[in-house]
Amino acid sequence: MARVHPQVVANSTSTKQEVFTVWMKSLILGSNGCAVFDSDGEIVYRVDNYCHKSSNQVYVMDATGKVLFTIVKKKFSVVGLWEGYRSSRGGGRGVKNKENLGFRVRKLVGIRMILGLLTGYWPYKVVVRLSEDQACEYVMETHVSKPCCKIVDNSGGLVAEVKRKISKGGVVLGEDVLTMVVEPNIDHSLIMGLVVVFGLINRKL
Image (tube, rainbow, N blue to C red):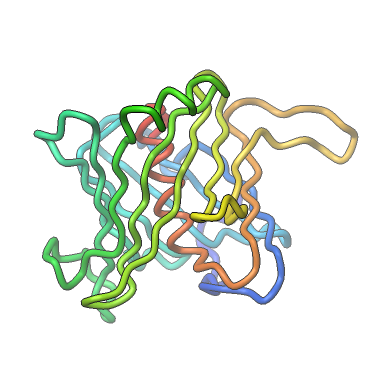
């Protein structure tokens, strides 16, 4: 995992299932964050949080350092609320306004939370803004004790999953090395933004 200055820019979608490796460590010494590698070992996304873990604001970047999402934790939310703002075409940090809002993640409460906890998962509602008057919803389920989560649509279909990486020899790697599987025709950068929220929830970033 030594390619710190790659030239490859991540593709946002694919017509086939894609598998990535998520290393929950920053490539910059003394920083918190993570790095994401594709199946060829090329870095495609990274997060470098120069402040401290569980910061209220972090940036999801591509391999070249272009900011794709600004992730913000809302300070006064009782149940936990995170928002992801898409950056401008120039790659600057996302302006936090309604026009740039890409997604919102909120912890579910009530009966849905109870049902989730019975299976060992905390459920979070994900609202993805597609246009000014159109949105779609997912549910992100994060395990209460293990470094794994899955994202499903309203019908229960799997959209993406993160879990401990297993080597070709069948060895389960450390909790900081994960596999991210993204289903076809899903925006990879969006899933990366949600995985960053997952990392913030679990105080890994």
